[in-house]
Image 1 (spheres, rainbow, N blue to C red):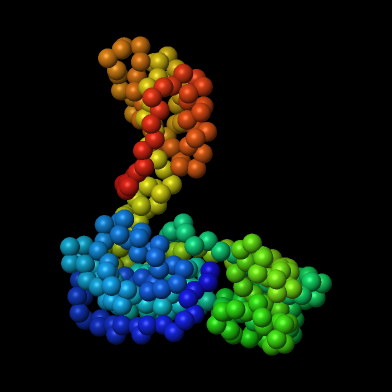
Image 2: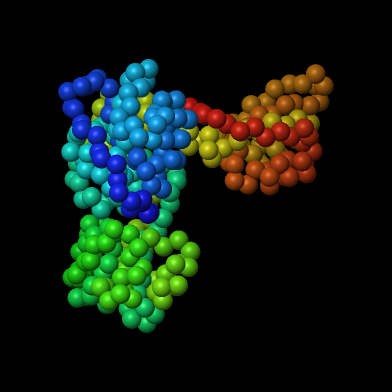
Length: 301
């Protein structure tokens, strides 16, 4: 997961004694995580910042405080107990190596995969890296992975653009995010060895849960359900209900209501957004009509 490497805005000074009853939430202030994290909190009913220069926002209606921080710093603040909860990447959480910070929930965005890469044919397994120089923006993460595999290597910490490290002679290999692999191939590098980490945005918590934590978690889960599901309504001959339920069983069970024509019923069911057109086609094929799909803005299940 890449983060903005431009000069960061200064982190706000935390005042642990102020607004002590409020849930204190760390939010990425910029980079690949920031926009989606803020949108998700907004969909969950929270009022965040309107000005990107704001580093501290109080939402009194929901009894929360938002602190907008560098994504790489969030695990440190949360793990130390200075803040109660935060949104960051799993890669950044593990790279921080902060014992008090713990992953609570996967948030379903900003997925990335970390791999080793080097000039073609130079290395094939992680054990081949013994004594090698490895450039990475995530030294804590990579060091822990190498320790697990019993490999001693020299890490070269860089803040982004590690693909050039081998060509410029400061490293023998790199460890970085791999998406399509195009950037690596352009730099003359091939991936090798096992996956270091599959990362995504996660909600992390301090060593102990604070008041309001369960409400936040329930709201975020509701947003994720709304992102993954849609509501499907259709009319169907009553005799075909069993066949239709096999096609779209819903999370628990479809809602079935009688129509004026006693031979027909109206059905409402939640269906995964991915593949909804195939479900509509299958329902139509067995006799369903007036099939409508509606977006879900939020949910509590």
